[in-house]
Image 1 (cartoon, rainbow, N blue to C red):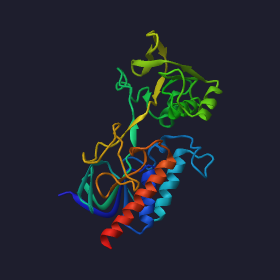
Image 2 (image 1 turned 45 degrees about the vertical axis):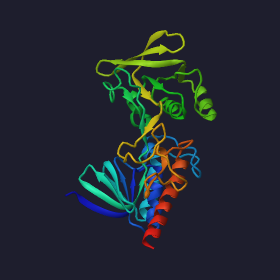
Image 3 (image 1 turned 180 degrees about the vertical axis):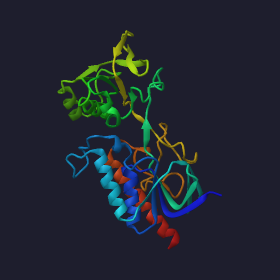
Image 4 (image 1 turned 90 degrees about the vertical axis):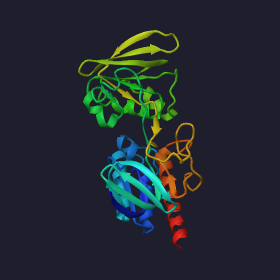
Length: 311
């Protein structure tokens, strides 16, 4: 029989939403655990500059993650490092998160804060050269490409922000976008267009990643003209969006057509006693501020539900 560890509230995932939920659960004097596969922070742990979180004109993502985790732990949040492989709802007041390490975490209520994962290009060579020139995290791998030509694929906020960051290392950073204009916020675009080390290739997609022991070039195609070309690069960073991490959840949890979890105003899912917050939840925008608000609501809803059940 697997070992069982019992809690009042279980939080699966350690991004800003999960850490906030953990803080509020622990602050309500309930036994609360946050289970995270890697390190607290989620997407912000891979973000160099955070400039849109109130109270911090500028802070790095890893710094903010540490501050959030330390704050939550001061209220008594327990942080466990384990990979959850399945979530079960056995009753309204018994939720089980099954860990890869052989522990079943049993809680009265549960908050899902599993976030999302980078969307891949799904082209030849991408998997082969992953970690050998193909990356999805600029802050993690940017320094490996010092004085090289770097390609960034995408046109949204993340792609442009990370391209700007990569100019600290690369001799030149080339943004490849399938459209003829960026989707990033105007203030980010303006910063990018002023950067002399940034170049742009419009209306273009990557058809193949080529290399030998590591990436040396990209096969490109213009989506309007059909013209094909080859671009010599030392590395390619892919920022074309991400998909929600819902593979561990019960099928009964309702999702929208993009796979994001649907919740009510309490952040409660279609399974009573299971809540969702942050990037895994269906919503208009996905920012740190959204996740923090979601986490607050989800945790307090769980606290109130425990109080209702136990009187």
